[in-house]
Length: 166
Image (cartoon, rainbow, N blue to C red; front, side, top):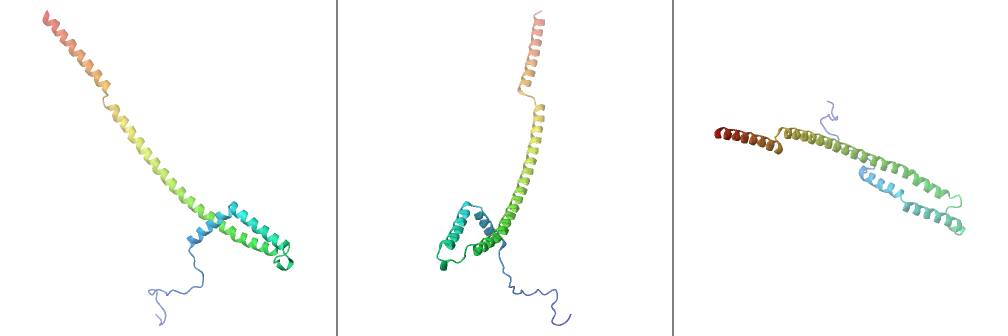
């Protein structure tokens, strides 16, 4: 091995990175909150008031106080910028929701399979109990057998008593 070269058994030292780091989970939660806000009537009212004030100020204010004259180029730029950020954030929020729905679907499917297995087990147990009960003598059956045996005994006793009296 050459001098100055590190082998594979030596870990690399951490390099400084100039790339920004962020927590994807926190960013995802913030994008979902933003997407939820964009879908509310409150946002539409706020945005309408903002645009009306902007257009009103830049149309009715004295000429020297206006900062965006009639075609409202700066307003268009701001709205385009807002839309260019809103669309990906909404898509990110939808993807996160789809992931949660997929996990929920899998959990529901697993629970349903477990419920089906439990139901099948209980059905088999119930069928075996029915089979076992059909083999067990019922109270009516035992009473009937005792009644028949009693009648036979009584008839034999009557027959003996008649033969004894003759």
